[in-house]
Length: 78
Image 1 (tube, one colour):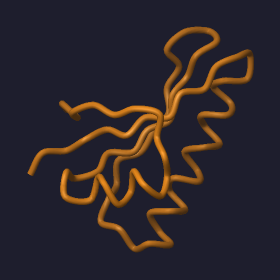
Image 2: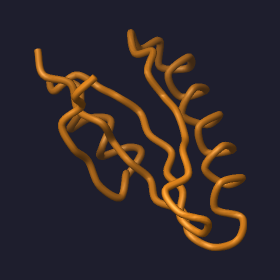
Image 3: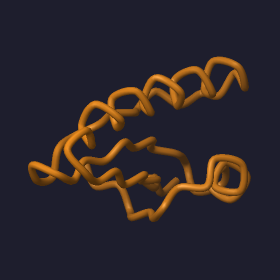
Image 4: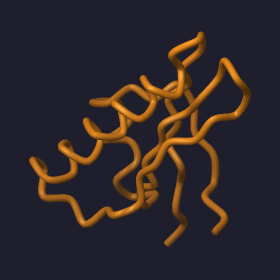
């Protein structure tokens, strides 16, 4: 099954710190909902733009997207 990367964008001088914090909430959501997901993360894209992300299977994407409202998504290729 295809995997999708749901992405939340953060901008500004505290972008990386906020993305790191947001990843903690994504991990909490996975635990609370007892989801079989284990790929989350955060990374800087530039000095003032960072992302937090969660990788989901295509069959779960719509339900998770509707609850967590990511800014964008893409096919996961790792």
